[in-house]
Image (cartoon, rainbow, N blue to C red; front, side, top):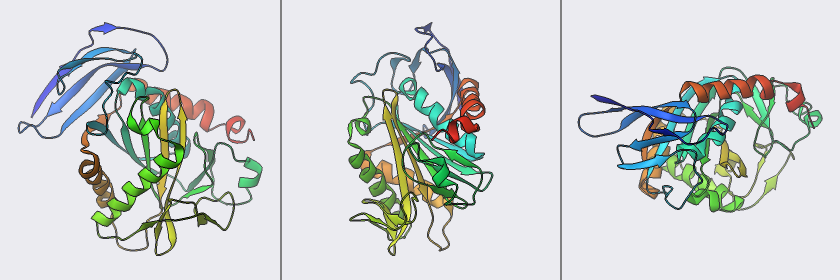
Length: 295
């Protein structure tokens, strides 16, 4: 095992949120997967040893940003509180232009909770579920229960291929990915051919076009937010009631992306600045009635 430290060369800007000033890279001696711990503070410039070129973090996105056939970040955050889970996804969206490549994040829940879409009315949501806390997502969509689901997020920088897709196209693409990942572990699912809403406002009652179905039941849905910072997709998988380890599905997601788009994966270890930003958002936004009940 070889560990090397990449130091920042030059601070370029002081825009918020904080960016990356370096990284610690641990690489196996056989040259296989590596682990990168990002050292975040102010956006800066460093050399990526895998690509032997200088990445200037904080600069405007360009056509040099990696396409689908490139390294993506992968992060398994483990279980978290509802407000912190939403905050961390927003912090990643703020940071993804500096990360310069897509991020796939898996995470869970330390409490039974529910999230609801950014544009939904809180007064209507409280009548639809007894789950608490209720946290407003940064993305759209409907009410999602988080009791035993498998949750993920995808974050893409501007200039990356997914960012340029229409909302319906990225929605279909992520669910084709999930369908193929299920197939890889022997679970047959299909995409919903049309909208079948039985209870408006509730994500997993009925189905939208391109949702993932198992024996006619919706098992995967997603919501999106696309702005000048990048594209954030937040998704929930309500696993079929069969013996199926979550880790097997997560591994299948990574393998499917490699087979379909040539993606290689590098582990992302957030530095203290990114974690501090997520904590601030959780404390000052996602835990507060002023945000969650503002509509």
